[in-house]
Length: 454
Ligand code: GLN
Image 1 (cartoon, rainbow, N blue to C red):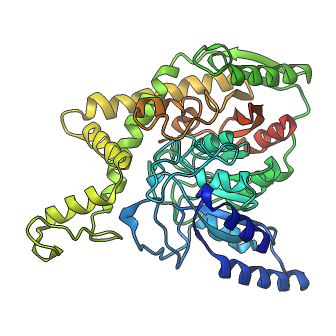
Image 2 (cartoon, rainbow, N blue to C red; image 1 turned 120 degrees about the vertical axis):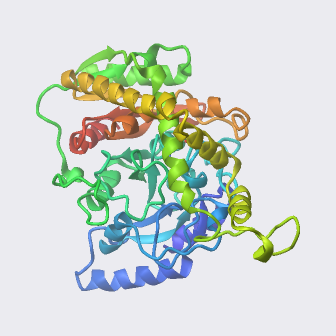
Image 3 (spheres, helix red, strand yellow; image 1 turned 30 degrees about the vertical axis):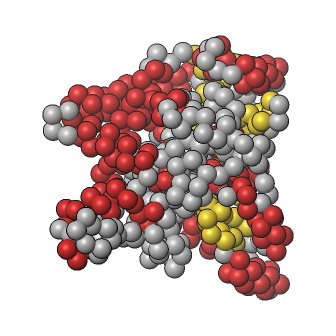
């Protein structure tokens, strides 16, 4: 813990942590020392982790990278976090992220941007940017992030670490601040596939506080083996052939495919006819869900309340509607406001069928097409991202360009399947990731193959 605290201090410029629990984690370490001495320590004894600023932890602030949750303290602990604590993990701090997990570059945080440790002029990816950089720079051993459309895998790829998004409903969302409830998944970021698998194994499983959690038994992912037969691996043809993909990423992906073929597996290209509908579907549905989820932040119930009024300096003369409007306008950042507006539009009476219903229908078609791929193949492989980490500020003026960073990651969330990003070399010092997607609840086989590929 002492060593990590020193490293965190030395790397303040990366802006990975929004809060460091120095005294608390040292005290926790002492307690665990005693447990180790009496042989009563849990399975994660001594593992020092950080948690993304969207996970509730009793008595600690949780801000979701937003001004609107100023001074808000969690009243309970997220189930996933509690399960890790029960196994004696040490939580060293809270990690910076895009506001309400909306973003692909960690530039939408009220705490300022996070910097990629491989090149501090570049973004770490998002939205779990602080969580990925913390592992990349050795500020903790592992992190817990959340993935709604790639927020664990994309920053993991940009930072050269492992990021795992489980099947939807594998890990309880209780205590996770909601972005888009039918997409959100809690997932680990770690240096190795083994660590990610172990963390998942401990966080996963039924929870009375979240009715969407599956009761399927949790496998010992960290021990999982591959079936003793050649695997059928599909890869996304566009990921290797499309000119929209950075050449270094196409080449690195191709080399991995060749290696898998040499290892005796069947490796074949597939086309997703609905690929171009993935991002529109994702952004219509997630903004719709977000506009509803974020309506609770009204300046009354949580955190930030506007004090400004045109006619007076305090809220006493403001009417309720103005209080809501001002608090939300001042409390939310530009990207969150954009998404609330988009989502509210998609859900409005005259446009509901044209946008929301249509997107739900397309979501079903995408799921059916994905199911057809997995009738023939065990895994679907693609680059995690179309480019390596881009420069800070490079895409902030063009949200559509920014959204394209998620082209390969959103499918897993649209269909609810598990996926993992593992490091796949570097180009000019910038990390490259490769993504493996598996059928629902096949996390065991997925991590077994990921381990083999590392
Ligand atoms: N970058 C995507 C978005 O902005 C994904 C975010 C996430 O997975 N939380 O929505």
